[in-house]
Image (cartoon, rainbow, N blue to C red; front, top):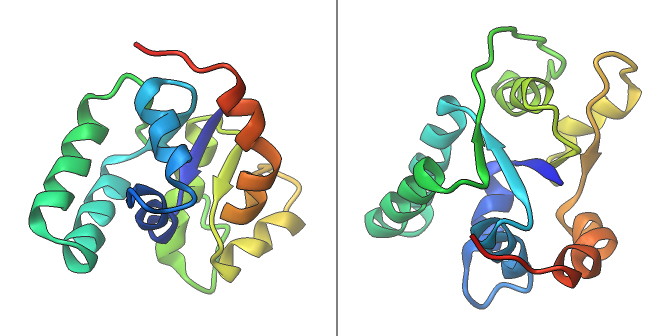
Length: 144
Protein backbone atom coordinates (compact mmCIF):
# COMPACT_ATOMS: atom_id res chain seq x y z
CA UNK A 1 0.00 0.00 0.00
CA UNK A 2 1.17 3.49 -0.83
CA UNK A 3 0.02 6.67 0.95
CA UNK A 4 0.66 10.38 1.17
CA UNK A 5 0.61 11.64 4.74
CA UNK A 6 -0.38 15.19 5.59
CA UNK A 7 2.22 17.01 7.70
CA UNK A 8 0.21 17.14 10.93
CA UNK A 9 -0.46 13.41 10.70
CA UNK A 10 3.24 12.71 10.10
CA UNK A 11 3.94 14.52 13.36
CA UNK A 12 1.30 12.28 14.98
CA UNK A 13 2.92 9.02 13.88
CA UNK A 14 6.59 9.60 14.72
CA UNK A 15 6.37 9.79 18.51
CA UNK A 16 7.57 6.59 20.19
CA UNK A 17 4.56 6.69 22.54
CA UNK A 18 2.04 7.45 19.79
CA UNK A 19 -0.70 4.86 19.30
CA UNK A 20 -0.12 5.44 15.58
CA UNK A 21 3.62 4.76 15.74
CA UNK A 22 3.00 1.43 13.96
CA UNK A 23 2.51 3.44 10.73
CA UNK A 24 5.96 5.00 10.89
CA UNK A 25 7.49 1.66 11.87
CA UNK A 26 5.70 -0.01 8.94
CA UNK A 27 7.23 2.53 6.58
CA UNK A 28 10.65 1.94 8.14
CA UNK A 29 10.52 -1.83 7.60
CA UNK A 30 8.91 -1.65 4.17
CA UNK A 31 5.36 -2.82 4.89
CA UNK A 32 3.97 0.53 3.80
CA UNK A 33 5.17 3.05 1.21
CA UNK A 34 4.91 6.78 1.64
CA UNK A 35 4.98 9.04 -1.38
CA UNK A 36 6.64 12.46 -1.05
CA UNK A 37 7.77 15.35 -3.20
CA UNK A 38 10.60 17.76 -2.47
CA UNK A 39 7.98 20.35 -1.52
CA UNK A 40 6.43 17.95 1.01
CA UNK A 41 9.79 17.01 2.55
CA UNK A 42 10.58 20.72 3.01
CA UNK A 43 7.25 21.29 4.75
CA UNK A 44 7.74 18.21 6.95
CA UNK A 45 11.16 19.51 7.98
CA UNK A 46 9.89 23.01 8.72
CA UNK A 47 6.97 21.83 10.85
CA UNK A 48 8.97 19.13 12.63
CA UNK A 49 11.64 21.65 13.55
CA UNK A 50 8.95 23.97 14.92
CA UNK A 51 7.01 21.28 16.82
CA UNK A 52 9.93 19.15 18.01
CA UNK A 53 13.54 20.18 17.49
CA UNK A 54 16.22 20.49 14.80
CA UNK A 55 17.63 17.00 15.50
CA UNK A 56 14.27 15.27 14.98
CA UNK A 57 13.60 17.33 11.85
CA UNK A 58 16.99 16.42 10.38
CA UNK A 59 16.65 12.72 11.25
CA UNK A 60 13.20 12.40 9.69
CA UNK A 61 14.28 14.37 6.60
CA UNK A 62 17.29 12.12 6.14
CA UNK A 63 15.16 9.01 6.62
CA UNK A 64 12.77 10.25 3.93
CA UNK A 65 15.66 10.78 1.53
CA UNK A 66 17.25 7.33 1.92
CA UNK A 67 14.52 4.84 2.85
CA UNK A 68 13.58 2.44 0.04
CA UNK A 69 9.92 2.60 1.14
CA UNK A 70 9.77 6.35 0.57
CA UNK A 71 8.78 7.04 -3.02
CA UNK A 72 10.05 10.37 -4.30
CA UNK A 73 7.65 11.86 -6.83
CA UNK A 74 8.08 14.79 -9.16
CA UNK A 75 4.83 16.64 -9.69
CA UNK A 76 4.68 18.12 -13.16
CA UNK A 77 1.02 19.08 -13.07
CA UNK A 78 -0.87 21.30 -10.66
CA UNK A 79 -4.46 20.15 -10.39
CA UNK A 80 -5.54 22.81 -7.86
CA UNK A 81 -8.37 20.64 -6.55
CA UNK A 82 -8.39 22.27 -3.10
CA UNK A 83 -9.40 25.92 -3.34
CA UNK A 84 -9.85 26.81 0.34
CA UNK A 85 -6.22 26.14 1.26
CA UNK A 86 -4.10 25.94 -1.86
CA UNK A 87 -1.04 24.86 0.15
CA UNK A 88 -2.72 21.45 0.59
CA UNK A 89 -2.56 20.86 -3.16
CA UNK A 90 1.06 19.68 -2.93
CA UNK A 91 -0.25 16.53 -1.21
CA UNK A 92 -2.97 16.02 -3.81
CA UNK A 93 -0.57 16.48 -6.73
CA UNK A 94 1.88 14.04 -5.14
CA UNK A 95 -0.91 11.52 -4.56
CA UNK A 96 -1.96 11.69 -8.20
CA UNK A 97 1.61 11.52 -9.53
CA UNK A 98 2.53 8.72 -7.14
CA UNK A 99 -0.60 6.66 -7.78
CA UNK A 100 -1.27 6.29 -4.05
CA UNK A 101 -4.08 4.41 -2.37
CA UNK A 102 -4.91 7.19 0.11
CA UNK A 103 -4.02 10.59 1.42
CA UNK A 104 -4.00 10.33 5.20
CA UNK A 105 -5.24 13.60 6.66
CA UNK A 106 -7.74 14.93 9.15
CA UNK A 107 -7.71 18.36 7.50
CA UNK A 108 -11.26 19.33 6.55
CA UNK A 109 -10.05 21.01 3.34
CA UNK A 110 -9.29 17.57 1.88
CA UNK A 111 -12.95 16.52 2.16
CA UNK A 112 -13.67 18.24 -1.18
CA UNK A 113 -11.78 15.38 -2.82
CA UNK A 114 -14.67 13.05 -2.02
CA UNK A 115 -16.85 15.03 -4.45
CA UNK A 116 -14.38 15.06 -7.36
CA UNK A 117 -14.68 12.21 -9.83
CA UNK A 118 -11.50 12.86 -11.83
CA UNK A 119 -8.77 12.61 -10.97
CA UNK A 120 -9.92 10.32 -8.17
CA UNK A 121 -8.02 10.84 -4.93
CA UNK A 122 -9.00 8.84 -1.85
CA UNK A 123 -8.88 10.68 1.44
CA UNK A 124 -8.88 8.91 4.80
CA UNK A 125 -8.44 10.15 8.36
CA UNK A 126 -5.62 8.82 10.50
CA UNK A 127 -8.13 7.07 12.75
CA UNK A 128 -9.89 5.45 9.78
CA UNK A 129 -6.55 4.29 8.36
CA UNK A 130 -5.63 2.82 11.74
CA UNK A 131 -8.97 1.04 12.07
CA UNK A 132 -9.07 -0.32 8.52
CA UNK A 133 -5.45 -1.28 7.86
CA UNK A 134 -3.48 -1.80 11.07
CA UNK A 135 -4.10 -5.52 11.43
CA UNK A 136 -3.65 -6.14 7.69
CA UNK A 137 -0.35 -4.28 7.43
CA UNK A 138 1.08 -5.69 10.66
CA UNK A 139 0.04 -9.22 9.72
CA UNK A 140 2.90 -9.66 7.25
CA UNK A 141 6.00 -7.93 8.60
CA UNK A 142 9.04 -7.79 6.37
CA UNK A 143 12.41 -6.16 6.68
CA UNK A 144 14.77 -4.81 4.08
